[in-house]
Image (cartoon, rainbow over all chains, first blue to last red):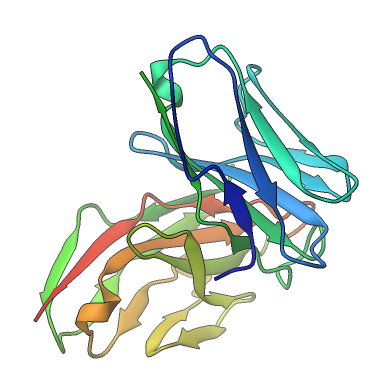
Length: 115
Length: 113
């Protein structure tokens, strides 16, 4: 158990809908990362937050947005869903924002299926 | 940009066999290199890491050496067990500026008793 929790574990929805994925980082970690794992694209970095502020942005679509709240949990919002958004979404957390010593601990993921 | 390339295809081998998974990278500067493992139905776990050239990361019998001259970080284990069956990902973190990880495609390893 990494200490990072993600809910829900599974999500099934229809095209055009909007969903929210939730992540709680390990106790004491200030940085949260979101990654998408799909069969065709592999594991891709989406976005990073540090202590409530956006820190880095990767291949995140405009239909997707995220935020980190004062209690440090984070939410990833996916809207106008398409079939191609079906994937496993991972959250990770680390103590600081940068540096190789900042090991990222991954949650178990949320599997999103868009029908 | 930064990228990681892993050898294509799953790896199937017998218990106690020698395992090698190749990983090469493209990056500017001096990235940190990682191997992550994903067991069925679980998230990724850090297996080992190396933060500078010639460093050797090791954990649970697995080893990988950061080779800057060949831009490689191959994973090896001398004698695999059935419990090592999992997907293995090579990843890098840039040398400065941010902590985002760039992952390879991953290799499914299946160890047969």
